[in-house]
Length: 272
Ligand SMILES: C[S@@+](CC[C@H](N)C(=O)[O-])C[C@H]1O[C@@H](n2cnc3c(N)ncnc32)[C@H](O)[C@@H]1O
Image (cartoon, rainbow, N blue to C red; front, top):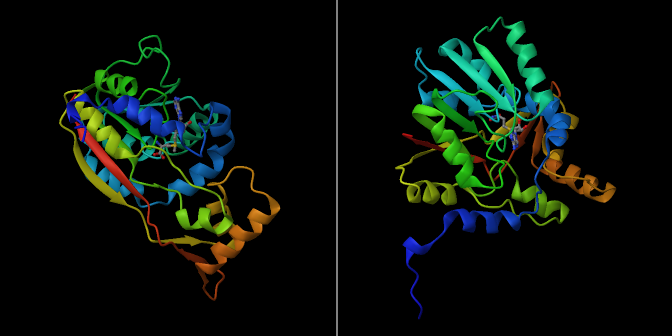
């Protein structure tokens, strides 16, 4: 039997190969623009934020770079906890929502930067920060280049969160409508790649809620529909049936959805 030497494994290449098998294709800035409002609504009440901040333990003197910041899921709550935050995203709509919320809450230490992972960050005039984070936002073609960039822009600490297995997708929902699910490489590639890059990453896990609460059944259904592109009429019916099968309705009409596969995020941190 041929032997495999672990030192010969190119984790960036393995990650890219696995990514090419994905059923869920890469989203462009305009796709994220369209999703911005519903994404902001969906994530604002998740326990993810509290758990992430609990692990990060922000320090008042820190400056933080939040790459792929979205509508400010972390930029906004971090703002009063630290010296300043820079939110970078390639979706103008996400940054617009972030800026509106920052204004409404009179948060004055946030700078937004309209740019992508692939841009030259020096050209965007992003200076090194104390800490750089990328939360659920490593949607890149070259993982090693992105990790190198994040590390180069942090003095003290780098933190990313990456999917564990299927991440936020519900495999039961895919099975129910008869679509295959391949969510691509998960965090284990990232951890191995970081190790090969010379870092010693620490891994912790963020478990999301088992039960999701919605105001109505149609809200619960749209909480699931984002997982699928171009649902056919028949798939829509099957999805409705599936969500109905795992939902319970209270007397006031509130709907609780009990999922079997609870999403887990790997919280990976290292010293740059
Ligand atoms: C799943 S959201 C995560 C948002 C936020 N960090 C959070 O944890 O809720 C991914 C974000 O990454 C941004 N994004 C995706 N690809 C990007 C790229 N190539 N350059 C910059 N931002 C990107 C999207 O616009 C989106 O706002």
